[in-house]
Image 1 (tube, rainbow, N blue to C red):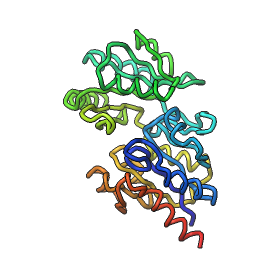
Image 2: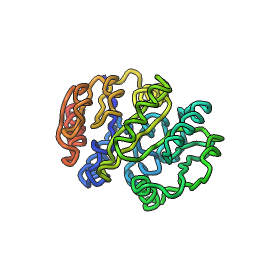
Image 3: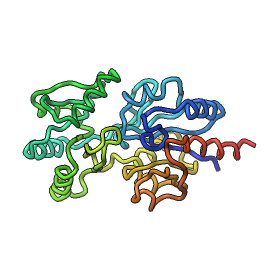
Image 4: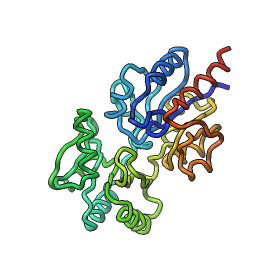
Length: 282
């Protein structure tokens, strides 16, 4: 039976500098040309995926924003969008602002993706804004009144602050909105000591995105092998026939892994793909 391969990016397929190494890029291109069924499932958006994969033509749509979207990377067209219900989005915005957080709001107006932010932000948020400017990410817009963004489909709230404050907010969200959201708290690997709390619709998971991708691409009969390093990969690890964690994976994810491979700095994912694909194409 053929196998569909799906990889996370940061901490998994990418180097510690958030790039594809020359070896991974060249090997992946060669494997894709030979027919490897491969794509990615990432917390990133297509706006940041595109520059990373410049010169690499993925044959399948990508799963972005942890399953909020399935998107054609070449065109940016969304094949699926899981947004937060408008009443819930309004309640969340009210709650986080009452805690004096300044959220980033990722949204979709039916034609374009946006990320809205306010001014006078903390260094953690400013790092993200500066990174977006560096990558010429046109989604970003300053908005003095974030309630106006609720006219669009809200795909994700991102809160960036210190771990203690975000942990308290995470507990409050769980108490106020049980089972309504997919929530992830993690340290920004590129800015230590600053943590991100992301909140999306409960159906916006990597597992649900993979199931929808298989349906859209008629891949239901394929075995599934996935690669990851962090807790937002747990849903797809539970779904997969083979779940492969990198050596730098969190302890929580390792509990769901079928195999542990090398560190993400060692081209471990593409080496695994190269070996497995060579066994099929002997």
